[in-house]
Image (tube, rainbow over all chains, first blue to last red; front, side, top):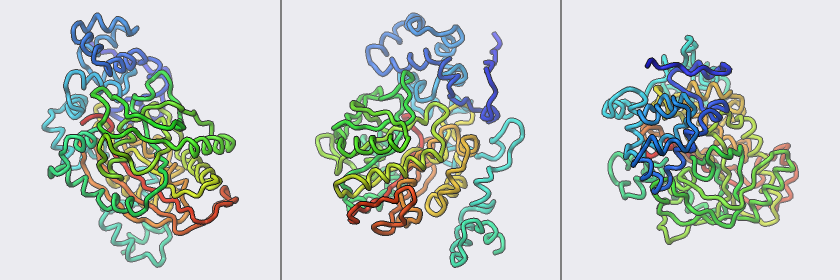
Length: 177
Length: 304
């Protein structure tokens, strides 16, 4: 069955962020059952009951069919889309004996090795990952203080200009150098 | 972050990967030993431990005499029960509520790695049957369900807490921790996001120009610093409790620790009295109180 994209009751500015399901009030309400199910896994007896018969155990939580499917298939992105929160769904991962990094790799569609290598190399860049609709200019709060120069350059520049240090002129001072 | 907690609890701190991170806290621990606070106010976030989705308080202040470590699904961390400071905590509650910050009061609360890991990083390892060096007033902030409080609200709450501490009859040396992430995203296909430029900029301004930070809208935190990076607003509570002008005692930043960056900064008021603020215009304190802040960031919240 083709996966149906969950319709949002209302569009928000943060729905423009790619690869991100913000856990807001709407998702919190829709995903109450998913998150309460995950909370139940804090107890060992519940973890055992769930593992013994997953589908049966899930009936206790007033889940939609899509939510049940997502849990059974361990489709973590779908769980987030349907109202699960990562701190809660991670408890399901822990129940399966998966490290958080394994879950993260899974959500990003990469192998654990590739994901771990990406993190060691400094993580996923924000460049090209800010917006679905092309709003890829850096935040003005970032520009105002940091400019577009590498951190080290900026720091050196700042050190040289401390006498006339006005926070606002940082960028300009750095550029003048 | 739990991965740091696990590394501490399983004796991995000497492994090269973790040593790089833990060695960044050695100076901070020395600073803390020297400072010898009477009490620590710790601003942190709970990760589905004390609060699930059943109740989500925006600001919850722990007024209990003690706070046991929570079982987060793999048994409680092997650290001592955290002692509270009920007298100071209830004084803060009374003061800030009358200052129009509608806190939730918790007279019974367990605390998770969101609080105990930063404590380990700043106080060092403490055996389960030992004692933390000082009592704690926990302040849990909702940064799990959107929207968390705004940066401005957090900063103003910090100022109100400062005022409350200054009006407390006993002269105490207080440190305040802001905790939580710098940039990080641990959910969805964009997981793994780190924005060092953003983090450095944030730390620079936290030190020198916090007024700039309190205007940052939530969307900018989430776009630039990741969906979970919005936790950074908690640092502004700490910053609001300090003088306008502070000394940056120490800073440490590294990438990665498991799924995230790790950073912390120590800021100290310049002297007794400091730069009195309008909102704290009644310093009826005998001036001996020194208030300092240690902020630290830990980024991933889920066992790595």
